Length: 156
Image (tube, one colour):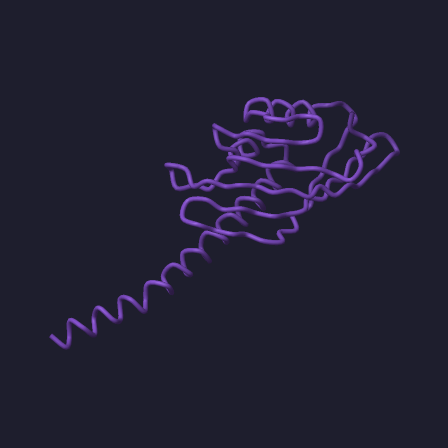
């Protein structure tokens, strides 16, 4: 009987530690997904770039509300295909990752540098990404909001 009570107590004490361990792993997985996205974007790897976004993505960016995954990916592909335009994202400055079960909220800042002809411009894009763990176990962005304090000079 005492052994059962001790086992129950140990399980109760271990549960919060296991939850924290899962949160640490989830934060690390989300951070890695964002870093992999950055590498893919800079390498013009369209498949990996779009894989970060959930099929039911809804994105809000300057001048576009309720953007879908397909529309966003098409916009990224078109920008990367523009002759004479070079786009480069730094790894994101992740300020916070809050994880709760299969949802996570990421507050972050992206730095985009563009070069067109002899003009280089760098802008910072603060944002909130809401990740959802998908049926394949991968974290993907289901919703996001991004804005900038000023438009990048080399982008329309």
